[in-house]
Length: 480
Image (cartoon, rainbow, N blue to C red):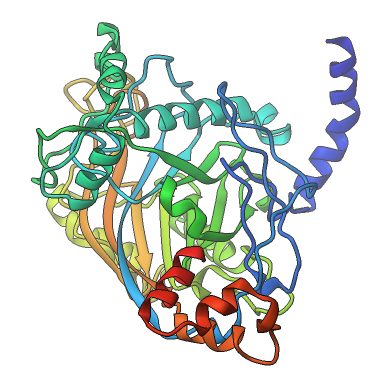
């Protein structure tokens, strides 16, 4: 214990200097459930793979010590793309520095009982209190690990499959065994957790009933900077199609560089479509001039966030260069006006011509303000009927927002959830996402194996291709 304390004292000045001089932590310093496969378009360069989770939670960040490579796809194999559609669940939640209780159930917040989604994008703010020790010191990853454990438990818990979802029905048939036992274990929730349970706003999506389906989700990437935590999860059968994951952290807080404010951004490819997700926590305050600080923070995030380009691919480096972009977080925008007029001005404040988010899209805000509540209460802070003597009046605000850019993103839902865990309420959005996927051509493979570049005379695969009829191609396709 004493030795660890001495080591921390030695590393403290270096850690603070790295934060002050904006030294990046590395684009591949993140946590994931599985080694990230690298597309060969990197010309053999191996992207480091993070260590996998164990039963007790997440592993620490991994250095560039292990890697996974895949054989380079042949040019003959690359043909026209097909379009696939996936359902993406995005949510942001400022948890106010409150550590999650062990019995906190996130199933309702993640809507796992009503429907199954293909991709989950979850952004947290203030997972730790924004004290000087937490801002200047090393990131407290145990708290982020605990949130990931709760997300994993909620996503992978057995639940009823929606009768109108063909994918869920297929999953239920394939993985129905043992689901009843898992459901029984998940139902033993303590009565005292009821106040901290996240209740969804029903809108008719999905349905009850149906047989139990044991779902399996994997963490693609999880990254924490001080109090900002961004984690991305996909269905286990989609994990092999996710490539080139990397992260970028930008601090905009104290002295314009510390991580009490700023953003954690993640980019990855799903099939042939690039995704970028930014989880932001912008400058707070409702006084004159604070809006300019928020706009400045947003501009800094968009300009300073940079991802690796790759040696031969010329990959997009900036947030706005990707195909599908989602920006979420505690943006802290607020208007001190009557509620009816405020609703009309909310979107114009964020998306105005001179604003930092001009050109972004946001769904219609039809939910109540998400900030600020008394702790463990449904009462807004500083209201006339409940305010304490001498307490500052605060106008309730829609601080927590989800924006997006890019064709192929279609928002299906935009609402808030109910939880008394912090002074914010979670906000979530459901998207239908179009993704381009390569359509492999078996005839191109056949031409290659019968060409002079391949010694077909000694190959069993070539013998199969030389056989007449459709059966040979099918047999070779099964082999592949």
